[in-house]
Length: 378
Ligand code: TYR
Image 1 (tube, rainbow, N blue to C red):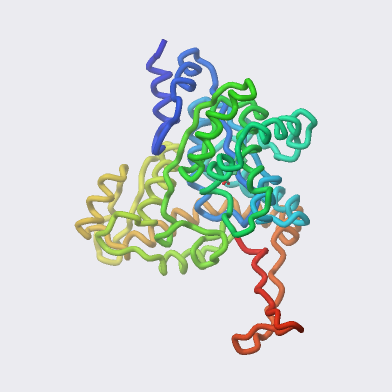
Image 2: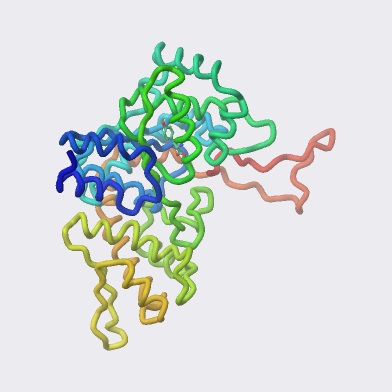
């Protein structure tokens, strides 16, 4: 039976989500007073940036609502997807992710004792799992596998076969991680609906799915790991953070697709709420005025629309709060020799570019032009 407590827990699980598929699965567990098991997977490819605070906050809320949470460091997926993580670097990248994601969660106040972190390759090579991959590959059409991965797996001409395996493995992960629900961004939706259809074909049960909206990056667009100026690295020093936020595109009075407002809504306000303070403060000392103190995004939006809250006022406030979240992560990084060594190996500095011969690239016999090396991006 639904109780006030289970309703409250469900409201926190659902907060700020764009969609929940098969929510009755989660509700039933809550009504029994038990702990829903939720997992979030991340392919260990490019360096995690500040956009990762968005899923991190949800994970913190799931834990606060009494869920058992697993984070999957999807190392095998890292190279199945067009070798985004090259084979020789994938192990170090997964270790880098392990360090940074656990400290990130600590930064938003999560007790990571209750958190399970699993490396994909630790079970995805077991005979049972591999046999299930073969079985699934014999039942699912090439067309459906391609469709399921269309928004997640890099689409190229003459794409590697591994891109078709990617969805099959992600679907099986729900079973092998023994979860009740998978959490991810809206970009995972096609994979999630595939999971609902495909798992029962192997006699496994259907899971619930929790979908986060796609949040615009602090620079206005989707944060991408491959464009260094479009993202703020979790290890960027405070001055760099200030500089990048200063440059961030934020049209006055426009609240749509506004990365700064989105960051306040999906990260800073919920982080404050989890700490029990629930406030976002905007100083106006320079104008000789009292600070503006907000507890909800609606009021912030309203003031932004009327230009009471200008980009010039909001940027220093976001910078201050973001740097406060980053400080403990950076302290932990400095304190851990092991982590620093992994960082160097996982993301070696790109080889120095050779001087370009005017627009023509290097010529090889036969007129073949050297292609720029794109493998190391993402
Ligand atoms: N598809 C996820 C992404 O886009 C990564 C992932 C991989 C999630 C395997 C779950 C999973 O089981 O980052």
